[in-house]
Every structure is written in structure tokens, then in C-alpha cells.
Image 1 (cartoon, one colour):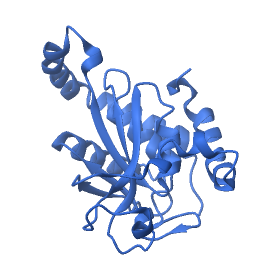
Image 2 (cartoon, rainbow, N blue to C red; image 1 turned 30 degrees about the horizontal axis):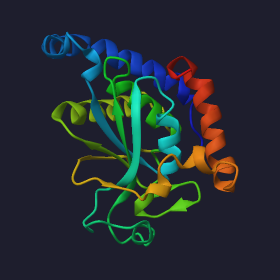
Image 3 (cartoon, one colour; image 1 turned 90 degrees about the vertical axis):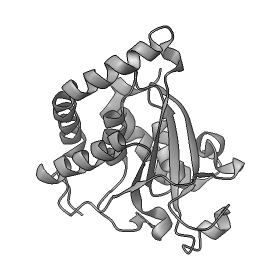
Length: 220
């Protein structure tokens, strides 16, 4: 699938949207800052994304400044307390997802969206590369009206700017129950890179791309 030069284009879109949202953000920050003015370190928010194998999204998001924790898990379906084995059947309705706990004073939601859309293909339905099934769908699970508006506006801008040749199929849904994945899935890349060929074949290139496109956003 042919794409345009989207890392740079996505960043430009992010800049445009950040400027357009400046007035509204300032109003929200004024209220928030009054609450957190004595200790901004207590200020945290959560973003929830799905974009193929959660090992990939977890690995890239965890490297961003301002991100405290990334938790791999399952959401968007109906099966209660699903196991990874059940997820792999594709019948639970859940997507492999990540919850990103971050400090919005350091990294904001639009920046997370920019990285998210750069690090996976949002135009392939229920698929990322060789990973096929509804559990690998592209989705954004919002936890507030503000996140919903930001996600929908971001996708609209990407579409208007024709960043991708094919239509974006990323779902935007309210966040329901989020089930943490099994312990062995957490921090998977760092714990298993040398033992699992998937890490070197699939995740290593994503880490390299992250460093090339967003070096200024990465932790030391």
C-alpha cells in the first residue's frame, strides 16, 4: 500500500491542530492549573489505543517523555476476564490494546495520537501486517468528551490532508472495562527481545522508526 511521507506530514498536522486548539486548551489548563499548581507531578491522564499486537504499541509509547506506565490489555469486547488464548480466537470482541498513563503537562493527547498514527497502519481493517483478526483492529477508546473530540478531529484532518492513500478505518469508541493482560505480556519487548524473533523482525524496525521520527519526544 502506497503512503505519502506521513511522519513529517503527521507532525505538521499535529502542529496545526495544536495551534487551532490553543484557545480551548488554555481555558482547560487554567482550570486544571488552579487544582494542580502546588504539585503538577500529581497530574495524570490515561489514553487507550489499539493498533495491532500490543507488544508493538506498548514498546513505542513507553519510550515517550511524560509517559509513566503502559499496560497491555484487552478491551472493546463482551467476554469477561478474557485470557490471551481466548483473545487469539477472535471471538471475544476485544482488541489487543494499551493503556498509557501520562503527564499531560509533558506530553499531550494530540502528541500521543501523532505517534500512534505513525507507528501503525490505520487503513487495514482488522489487520496489522501478518497479524490478522478483529483483535488486531485499529481503535481509539476515549475516556472523556475531550478525547473523543480530539480523536475525531485528528482523523478528519488526516483524511482532509490525504496523509494516507486508503481510507482510515480506526474506530473511535467509549472505553468500557479494560482487562490487564497476563503478566508475561507486560514490558514484553524489553524482557524478550533476544529470545523472540517477532521482537527483532517486527518491533525493532518500529523502534528505529520512532527514534528517527520523534527523537525529540523520547526519554533519555
